[in-house]
Image (cartoon, rainbow, N blue to C red; front, side, top):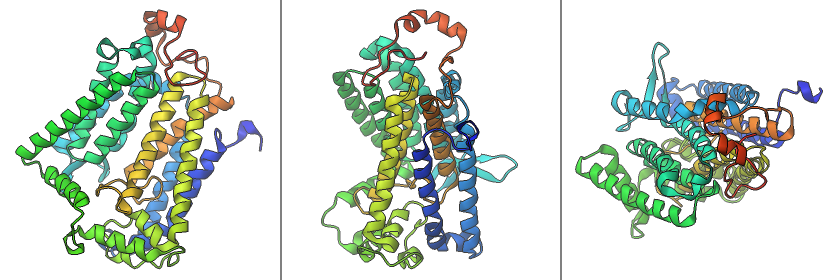
Length: 414
């Protein structure tokens, strides 16, 4: 097969690492979905496995589609990304499906399906954020009259997500601020922005507590339980205790595939606590293997970001890569009790629909950036703005824009 007709283009190592995670997830999901099968599939674990496998196949299809679309096209469309994200999040809050006292899911009419609004919202935010930072130019060196509006848009989306899912909102804000720093913002401005975020977070929790938002009490309980060193086992959350048992019983080599005991007791063993099942069945060696695959994945994405041919590609790959890695790290940290309980899934491993598909879509965009980098897709003639918008910002296009901490970039777009 020649290079021009290859099905999987771009960074082959990235394809392989994602494939490893997907294949590794299959026996895990088959083992861990006993409770899900009883509740949703009439006890048929094969249906749960086929459902997960079908979502993985759709995810692969999305990556194949997205990695063949010039990523600079998204630069033109993403100017509306922030508005679409805000609309989805508001719709979920006011009209979404309420699960576990949180309105996170948006129903799809006529299909009897739903998706978690924060999943598409975060990728829309990063598309918009990368575009805004690219076109900002030397304005990145100023907060007022510079990246203040970008910060405001990011904060609004993070707050809307945080109302129903605090951990996702905090991760979005954190990764967004790191991306702003990568783009070249001054450290002292970032310190002020972080201080403002802390104040806003305190006010946000205070308002939620006074208004008796159901999720606020859950956050406070989880944080207090995590930091209370005097907690006795009987005082800890049931899921935390069961996860600890799974981790402790795994040892170095684990009990073997399909031999987990805690899958029968651990809530959400197939999603939020899948890493605890990894340790129980495959031991510390299996846990280290999964961690190394994610670190390899992040290394490849970071390499793509460094050598991308445009600043927009660099920022976009950096944001999407950090978001995926943050999600993976939080899931693993929660499973081993290094972090308060959250609802983060393990990318490409946990059972779940919208998370798998959105992460696949994000990695498809990163692979599109790598295609441009390797020359398999020559999109250097494209711009992230239309011709009319380019004429209005001609001075930036002629003289280039600030590239901050991104090496090897002379202009924001070619």
